[in-house]
Image (tube, rainbow, N blue to C red; front, side, top):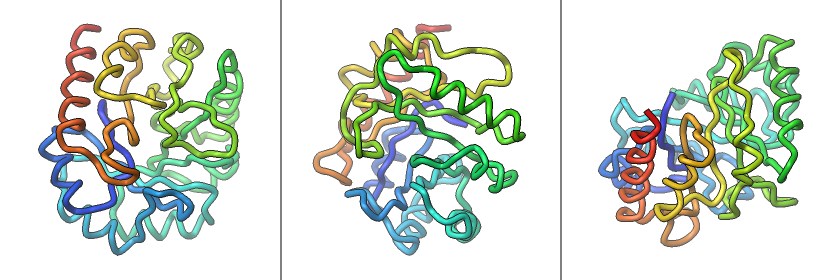
Length: 220
């Protein structure tokens, strides 16, 4: 679905900066406890400012199913990212919506992620992509903490496994090293390209995309 994603876009100005940066996907955060939260009206304006080729991802945390479905339909989102404690059964109830599942992965504990995905497979609800973020107790992401690259190197590559998206503390300075270490399908950042929580820095965003694409090119 994408190779580079910047999450937590909160303004039309930042949306336009993402276009200039050349990012493949942006994330719109509908979790009202996040400093990057946007309501649906703001999200609608942001989406209108983005070109069609940029993937628009809605981020939800333990939201009611009807809210997820209604928001997806109203805004024409390209994908739904689940970032809470949603069970595989929850994903199965979302039917054929394009789902991305985020996981907070502790050092040495890849099994929680892979076992969850196996349950999804049994229910016919394997997500399109799987995001691996850092585990910070009590926080659902966007902390700036690094994910454990050593653990994520062992992410399985059987054909049914969704492509791995590496997140967690990525910045223009370290994203190249992260890609070379983990060899993910894509990368995702929020705080790593911000001037302040929820406001993106245009030059950092451009540098992030440039460094990520250069590292991906080395893997070929």
